[in-house]
Length: 348
Picture 1: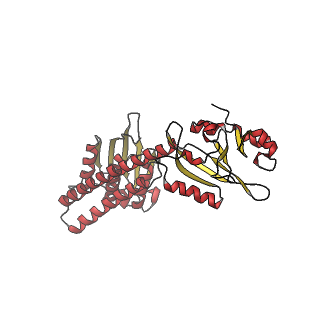
Picture 2 (picture 1 turned 60 degrees about the vertical axis):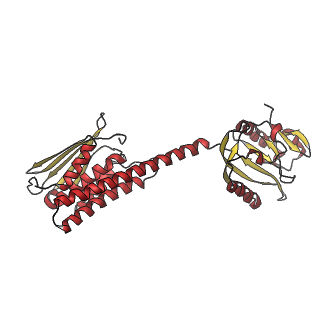
């Protein structure tokens, strides 16, 4: 590959250092600057807006390496030779607007290498003036961000797929909630209150996961605190959390949300959270086998007895069983103890 370190001026191809000595009042006025551009790893080209069609008059070796072109291929040509079939009109118009405005601008544009391979170019361009304020050059730096944009595209596709799958599951769970609550509740008002409460809890938890920043995950502690502290008049004096940070996947959020909601509402009505002296200890771990282990333990409340109807517990039990998990309710006189073992899949 040729040296690609020459500059085109007045119809002659000159060595950059010769150009420096010929034009001390321009960008080429000192060898330090010229050599910095020459050896920079950032692809860079310089155009001359005073010449017809604003040709490239200089490009460093990094520009040649990025595009695959030799200097003989582009010196004296306009930069549009890098454009191709997928170069959008909008990006070209953005470049023209930036040139007219004479501002330093960054524009993403699809360009093509000499071998025909396309790449997404983060093009930064701007004007260069002499001491008299006259526009004498324009610079353009290039950066191939194709890998970054492809990764972002795939992440967006995965999030969309996850969202669609999550919405489908939520609709299915809503259907189960309504059916099972309807079977166990004869009073229309009780039926309405329970359905609304369960759906609101479900929506709140899933909203947290869907509104999180890309790559961020909802933790079990965040989920538990959001759901349970709303039911505890004395806050963390009544609900005590013990466990490591555990990230949750969408697959287990539904089961855990409905379980915590049912436990909290039941405790407020019949258990420890309905008494100023009562409290709940919530403990969780994830051993090496990837199974989420949780213990809900109520103490200090009124004596409890196993209820005859458990529509909410039945819903959760079905969801846990569908995930190959295990859920156990131990209705001790001193307070309810619930143990859960739930495979975390990709959530831990």
